[in-house]
Image (cartoon, rainbow, N blue to C red):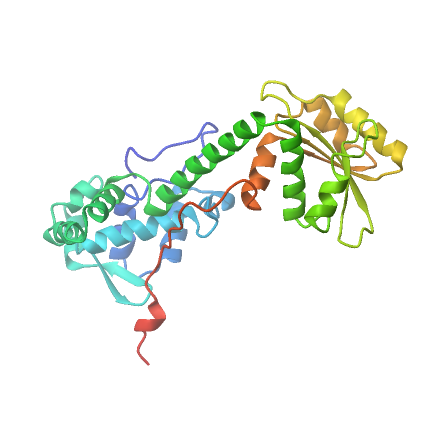
Length: 318
């Protein structure tokens, strides 16, 4: 491994980026035909990765990080002609790959691959498609992260920005608007029966520390009591507010409650709620925004990106 090999704060080995994996992947491929899972196990052993580290997934949860990086290391080296694929899912070092290893390189990266005409041709072919695709191909190859990791990172940035925007806009609205947000969210999550019935109940209870009550199911077999506090981000909800809400539940003979705030809950408030005989769920601003995005409340799809992969079964001859 080269200088991109790093350790985390606890001194454990982190998974190298895909360019740092090119040399060990090629060495394994030179030892004989192999597959990504087999190469992954060998490299994980070389790195001394723990079982959780070996199983660590991309943020999307669709693939293991180590498998993903090995795949892209193999992919780019194959474009340079360093790796051959004799059969589906199997790869081995080519004659050019073995020749490169014979020179005992300290590392292999994209700059190394640019010395091979086949890789340069791969770049050139991508540029003939469109300027946007050409820029994306070049950026993906030169970056330390794989294309999937770049997609996940971009999504995480957009997701965080959307959550912040949601809370900011809610804070700028009236208390009545916040109540409607809670109604819309609970109905979208399957509570309250119809939107009209939920709106009639929520925000009109007037029972001390309870802002409203909503049916847990469409038949009204059980009820959930709701408290909503629209606070600024720097004003947290403390234990006294949660304790007052629980006192109201006890007075009503209720066993289930939801306390929603646009800010956050203090540690004592969270600890208090965890040890209650009643079932009280605390939803802070971050969780509120997550639920709104998940259930399509106050947001809409801006664009959909469909990523396709090669259908290996299509090319499998009988």
